[in-house]
Image (cartoon, rainbow, N blue to C red):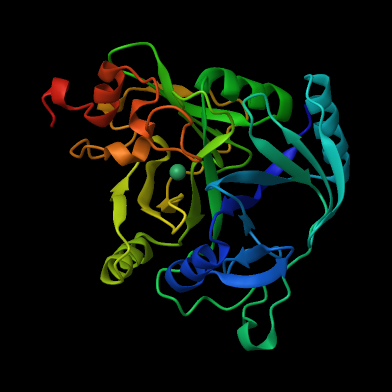
Length: 339
Ligand SMILES: [Fe+2]
């Protein structure tokens, strides 16, 4: 297979209160508004190369509207679409995605909308934010801890392994690692990538029957110091931190999770390895090895199991996940004398 996809280009999410969400992204995350079209607001990080990386779309619930990848060539776009259709999915060609143009959009087997495109509009900075550095899309933000660019998206699905296999076989995502529970052979997490990063697509187990959910998406900051400053400033401004700062074992990235006004989860992310190995064999981690928390000394908050939109059955932490699995996820160290 030729290399089809290059990188995650934007994430579109729905919010029941678009203006509240946008205000939060501008004031607390440090993004800037690029455009407003039909009620949707287009935003960017200072270091994003294209016109935008986040779209906030009006919607009844916080949810994933679509996740978009730029392909590696115009030929790759046709090839990717052909491969999706050959896998039994009927997608749709769009000619007028704002600031992009032509794109192929489809809903994957587990209900997640994905948009693929080759066309882009490169960001042209206004004079007041034009950088003196030729390769920098615009000046570094004056908001402390503002992310440089979009990093990854993590979705929820009822079958982590089958999801990873489908996106690997159909679109060429490399599977980089997975987590199975210590207590039972159940896959609860996997990471996939289209480039040298540890992942630009994460996959968490979803015990609900609601398809197409998102767990979080992440922005990148250059340094751990910026991530810590962002945590400091969020707390100082009454924005609760859900989890972190800490380091994931898988990917070795520093992380910090918090919520935007719709309740959707955002991650700030930095560090981590680079992996260029084309035939990488993914390792299997156990939670007790620190797959989620590298330091193996902290318990993940139960709220982290919530994905979006809320499950249509019982509450998120009771979405059909057996008690012992829930316990193993939340406190994987207790049985190993580490907690
Ligand atoms: Fe993440």
